Image 1 (cartoon, rainbow, N blue to C red):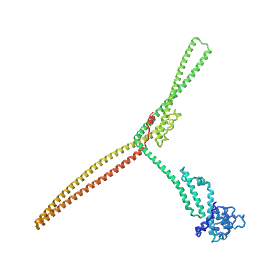
Image 2 (cartoon, rainbow, N blue to C red):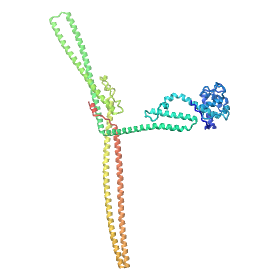
Image 3 (cartoon, one colour):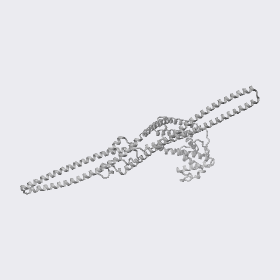
Image 4 (cartoon, one colour):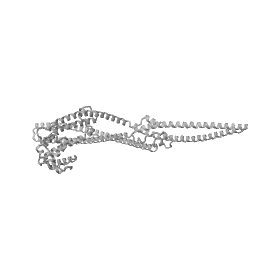
Length: 579
């Protein structure tokens, strides 16, 4: 427990003790704490204290409550061992030792329970209860605090060290913050408010060092991400180039699966035929052995008869002849038995060879299934059960996988779906190609029209320029004539003829000016029409380019989605499946 002394200058308690609601909340808090810690009333023995007794307690109740609370910190408080010490002195000394930031009047302790002293003492008791709850919470949660990874800052190292793991950084950050909270709380109890800014600056500097390390790690991860993104883009580009080959490999794979299914079906039929032959041969061998045993028993019986009876020479010759015939039959039956056993052995070896070849093909098949990334790859994987080779049901041999009813229909559906997508893809490409050709033709036509409009504009400008030059020449000639006429008028000095000549020349000037203005308006209207048609052409051309870009973008997206649904198969794997 920290024993930091209180500040020398008196501090004003900011808590609103005059507020009735705040006063009642402090009373309820004191009552809850005493009730939860099994405090017994000093006025009623072995009975819990009541809430109304704490609203206006007696001096005896106040002394009993303070003694009960302070003994939570110092079990020897006011136990009578030190003679001559007053209760008021012990209380003020105890509150100073625990860091209570306000002074407690000894006079208030002497008159404890009175209406004007009890609120001040209630504030001190409420502060002491909060301190006790904090201490109890820290003691109860110490193990949980350590389990969550909070450790003292000195055991975690300085900030700015290389980033080992996010957990280590989190522990170091939490440790620094907890150290900051602990220091600030101690100086808050001591009343040193100026220390907070210093602690905050030190904490920010500590975190800034770790921020620099984190930023460097982020930059390194960003560079690595950009490198990986470039590699992924390169892989996507290569995958786009391999689309026709992948589609062809997919079709070959589906064809190979059908051939594989036919091969398995033929092997199962051949196996069933061989099993039937072996069974028939076994039954025939057993019949032959049984007949041989009967023959041997008969021979032994005849030998016993020969040994016990008297025979003539003819009888002996007859018996020898029968014996020779029997021995010849026995040899023929033994030879037939040996041939049957050899055939059975060859059949078994042939079956074993076929099973080994089937295992090799199944291994390649399983690998190709895994590489295809299909959703039902695990369901369609085959495991050869050699112990079930004699079963007629082919799914028993293939580990429960029904190639005819499960695998092949699924693959055929997928093949048809991919073929439909490929056909639709080709149709879309042809449609887009036709659209592009028609658009290009339209663009060519519009460009031709624009070229014609430009030529028409150039021709109109040339015509306007020639006409203007001609008008200027005509105007100059008319002005020259006017000048000559004026000189003639002045020479003649005839007022009547002079006025008539001037009027005539003025009319000619007005006509020329009107003609010039008319030609100028005509040229200006033609120029505006050409510009309007040219602007309409440029707008149509821009819309056509936007449409082509949208169509090409949709084509690229469709192409990428189609590439994701393809399955790749190398040439080596195709040869293995064909075998």
